[in-house]
Length: 388
View 1: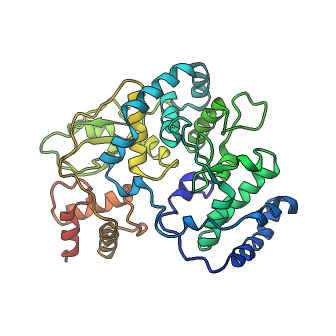
View 2: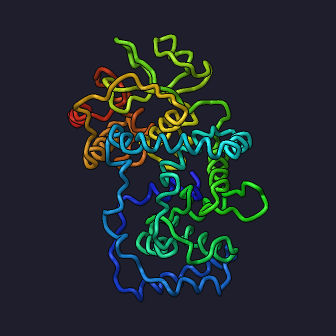
């Protein structure tokens, strides 16, 4: 994963520590960035912009955790995909249909996916964020000197100012430094932002066609396969063996998990609430959506919103009434335990994605826990802790 991607920055912000010492330490730290900024092409005059900054102490501590990693997919989805957002997306699909048709032809990304990104990121432009992006990024770079991505984003923001892309007073966005309608980090702007008409610097803050074209270009450059759906909801038949979580759509169909996906497509069976809840076959394009935000909740909500905008919605099974996710400490404990037993080799961070699901699936099969659905339940944790 490259550090220019928005998701890398956002997924690094669970907790920001240590605490500030004195503000003069903040100033001294910023001065240490000059050699890297100079090497990137930042002039000294532009670099001096940092001298006016003070640290944003509200970014310190544990208050920056993201809802998509702490809530169940069901609750995140219910909040992200509501009737008002669906209706607004449908109205905007009509209003911008000419521009969206051209963007879809150029990028290969469906208009409904582009609209869904816009809808979930900023509620179609209603909530860009009002923080000083440069101050936020400088604070995060200072507070998390162990993570060089924040320093690189500070330098990217300075390059935006130097190139006249946006005036200093408009360099505003989220607490994490994401900007404009697409919520691009400064480096993402430099790498993915495009102008709809190709005649000027992309304006993702106030020019809607530029913002939509930039979303499409981001997904295209990240590997979106034209003509391949993100996935689809499926019905898993009673008695399904859960032998594997990943194979071709054709093979899943032969086992009773039928879909309209291309037969040769490599897909993953995703049961976000376990075998008792809704299930999906997801394609490689689902994981492209996660380059925007590395969260299953985010990518699934975005995917379902895109279907709702198209007046489609395929989930036929309700969410279990007692559906709960493990607390973060227990998710970390489960990853540590699975790693100790040789089932998991990923990062110990309490965030569950495909590698964690595959590890749980392997453990369930080894421990003869049925169904082996890859779901991190309290039962799985207890079994892993007592496994010999």
